[in-house]
Image (cartoon, rainbow, N blue to C red):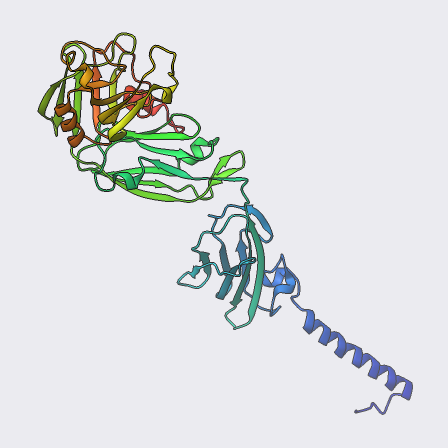
Length: 410
C-alpha cells in the first residue's frame, strides 16, 4: 500500500480506514442500485428480477395474485423498453403448460388455451432490454371455482336427425341443466347462423329453456350452425357454463299438413305443392285438438298412448290407454297423428278423438313414411284453444312481434 509520508501514523491509519469505507460504500451501491421495482418494472415483486439494472419493464395481466378470474380471460404478458424471450404459464396442481404465442415484435405474449375452473396458475416471464440485460417477472393467478356447472343440451338431439335432417318448422332449443338467472349474459353467447340467411330470434320459455325460430318457416335446404359459447359465463346463483358447444342441422324438404276441422280433411303439401288429401277425425267437443301450427317431435310405428303421461288418469272419463300404429307426436299433451281403425267411420265427417288426428291405416302409414321431425301440421277450425307457446313446440302460436319480446335482449 502506498502511504502518505507527510501524514503522521494516526493520520495515515484514519486515511486508510476512510478509503476502505468509501470503497465499501461504492461496492454496496453497485450491488443495490435499481433494486426498487420502479427501475425494472417489477413493482409487485422486486426480488423476481434476475438483473436489477435492466431497463425493460414486464407487466402481467391479470394482475399478480388475482383470484376468481374467468377461465376464458387470457393471460397477457407485455415488455416495455425491451422484448420477451420466453413466457411459461403452468397449472400448479397438474404441472401442465398453457399454450400461448408471442407477437411479431416479441413485446406481447397472449395465452391461447382456456384455463380450467378452480385452478391456480404460475406465470414466469423473461425479457431483455436493448443492451442485453435480462429481467424475470413472476405472478400467480387463480380461476373461479363454480358451485355448479350447467350444460347446454340441444333439442332435437343432433344425432337423432343427422341422417334425416329437420323440417321447416323445427325450433332450435337449448335446455340448460340448471336455471339461468343472468339470461341476457347467456343469450349473448348463443347463436344460430342460417345459410341462406334468415331472420330469427330467441324466446325464453322458462328459466331453463330458450327457443330459437325464424320469422317464417325455414327455407328447405337450409344449413343451421348452432353455437353456445357458455364456458366461463356466469349464469347466476353460483352456476357457470360447463363447456362450449357447436352443432349443425340441415333442413330437409318442406312438408306441411293442413288439417281443417270444417272439411274433416288434411291436405299435404310438399315444397309448396299439394300431393295428397285424406279424411281425418280430430278431437271431440270435450277434448278438442289445439289450433295453430304444430311441429312433429317424435315418431313410432307402434306406440302406447297413455293419458296418464300428461296427468289424465282413471277414473277420469277422459283417461285412455291404447297401442296405436304409425304415430307422430305433435304436442306434449297427448296430440298425435296416427292410425285409428275405431274412428274410420267418422273420418271425413265427425270429430271423435281425444285430441289426436285420426287416419285410416293406409293414410297413416303414408303420412308416417313421408313426414318426420320438424315437419308442420297446421290445425284450423278444430273448436279448440290455441296451442300454448310452452307446449313443446308451440313457438309458432306467437306473432313475430310477440316472439321477439321473449328475448332477454329485447
